[in-house]
Every structure is written in structure tokens, then in C-alpha cells.
Image (cartoon, rainbow, N blue to C red):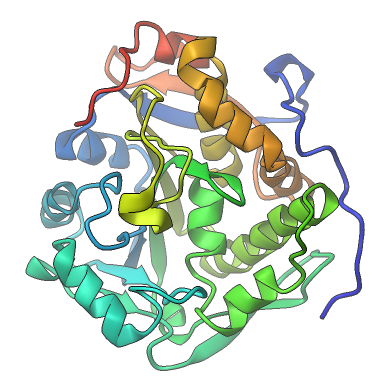
Length: 332
């Protein structure tokens, strides 16, 4: 276990765009929350996706109400990635996805087994990937079959998270690719009851785990964040998730993980106080911004970006433009 180290920043502080430095990445945006929207935006970021392709998404707890609908993913895969494989790992907590047998029953309940076979990557063992430049880890344990893939499409339901503040592409990979026993245990191993520094430690460990996976895939990875049914709860809470009060926004995509998650957070900030109050409280109280600042420190991407509205002729817009006129939440 790594020796205790203090966190490097205040993960409760949101950094406004004008205070950010460095280069800008491209982030694409559509308001079209549908399989067609997924396909259109994926077309903008698929350039380096080749070979054997893994689709990393959260397939959800039984009957989870807020996950990306399996029906959407079915159409998306049939049209865009017919030979790709959805990948998952077992959970660290006891429940309906703790063992592979339990996990496969849950996949069936949630509709995934009706059109594909999900690769639970830690079903047949684990593998270690190096963590370059980390302060907590030098390597991270992932599901062994992750290494069988050439490219990864990270298909993420953006939402709040009870421990991480928010769950974007970073959390989807950092927790979701770490295997259920060793890797997730490494990430959660130093948890204590008080928040603050320990919470930022968790943000940093999740991020280092993500870095191990994205370094493995190199340029052969793309990130798609779906801003829909955004509860303050993670999809791992299933039917017990807190009610959704944040409006639906749309879909973001980039080949830069930090830009994708930063733009998603910026869109939440750009909402009215009534619309974003609960989700921002969750992010701030859990020091979730540390995910973003630590990704930047580790050289994982840019927190500045050009936001391109593919619904209106590739018009350059701001996060505020993207959320202008969003309607109060209604399930879709």
C-alpha cells in the first residue's frame, strides 16, 4: 500500500474557463438524445478506432432506470460497430454484479444479453498495466481480457456519484476497467470515514487507474458522454438512485478525455441554480473537481476546448449556449 500523501489541490473549487491555460481540444456536441444522435457524434471521433474494439459502458444494476438504454446501444452497434464487444468488470461491493454468475443474470435482466455477449474482463483473471507518472501507483490491475483489444470506445452515462462527485469518462474507465477484487481494492484501499484529503486521494487513484488503461490504447480511444437522466447517484445504485432533477442536455464526444469530462461539468455549471443545485452540491462536497485537475497534471488532456455544435453546421458554441433553453427534467 502506498504511503499516505496529501492531495495536491482543492477539489471543491471549480476553475472558470478564463483561468485555464494550455492548448484547446475539439469537443463535439449534439442535443439529439437517441441512437441516431449517438451514431452521428461517434462519426466525428472514430478516426483511430480500428482492429478489435471494446465498448466500455456501465451496464447497470438490475432494472437501473438511468443507464444508457440497451436498445440505443443495440442500434448503435449494429450500424457503427457490428464486430465490437461490450466490456465490463465485476464489482468490489457485494451485490448483483459481484460474481460473474450474478453479473450475467443482471446483464440479462437489463436487456444486454438479448443482442450481444458482454466480456466480463476479469472473469478469467487479471493483468497489470503500468501507471506512468503516478504518485499512488506504479501499476494497476485490470481484467485480463482487456489486453485482447486494439481500440476502445468509452460510452459513458454522465451523472453524479456518491463518492466521486461525478461519473464521467474518467470514472467509467478508472473504476470500470479495474478488476473487481485487486484493482478496485487498490483504488478503495485507503478510504477513511472523513472526507477532504482522503476524498481527493480517491479522485487521484481513480485517475491513475484511468491513465493506465488509456496509455495502453494510446490514440485508439474515443470518449462519448451522454448527459441524460443525471441523478446525483451513480448507476451502481440502481433503483435506489436519487430522483433525477437535472435537465437532459445532449451528447458530447472527443478524443481527449479531460476535455470531454470538463465540457460536461461546464455544461452543468452553465445551468440555472435551480437546475444544477443538487448535482453541483454533490460534485463540490466530494471534491470531484480533483478528477479534472489531476488529469491535467498527469498530462491526460486539455481543460480548454472548442465546442462544436454538429446540429447547426458545426457552429462553435459555449457551454452556456449548449444548455440554453433546456427544459426541466422529464424521463426519456
